[in-house]
Length: 156
Image (cartoon, rainbow, N blue to C red; front, side, top):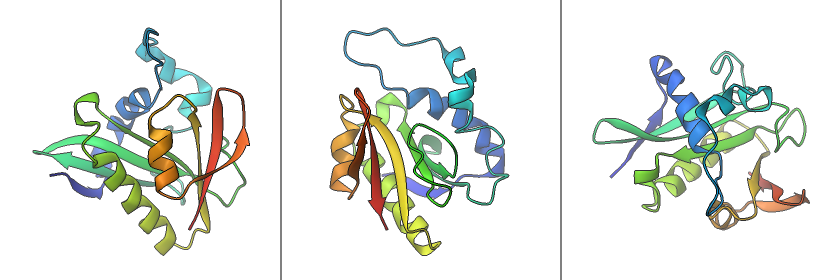
């Protein structure tokens, strides 16, 4: 079973791994090179993480290893709504997917944001991504359709 806890300051570099893992790769498509996370539109998710007042991150630890992360910050990303709404990113290493860990991480982050006084949280997800169902079950609703992806918001 996974232990869900705050990320430690020395663990923040692992967000680069989870940023890469969060990239949805459709069936039959080759994964992009890891260097893609250096692109400015992706760096907004992790650059100087933990230094901004709205940064939040929880990790799932399994057998002493960080298996997944969910993090939020107010940023001008794909899921940006406004400057009061944090955007959410979540991912797990492949071997930990499909075990309920992502759902548990998501629920804990929603509880954390609610208790911290946020009114809503947003995200962007590709329509083909199986995680879209998890978001819908958690209360996220589509607010914008951008072709291959949607922006979703969860009222807290």
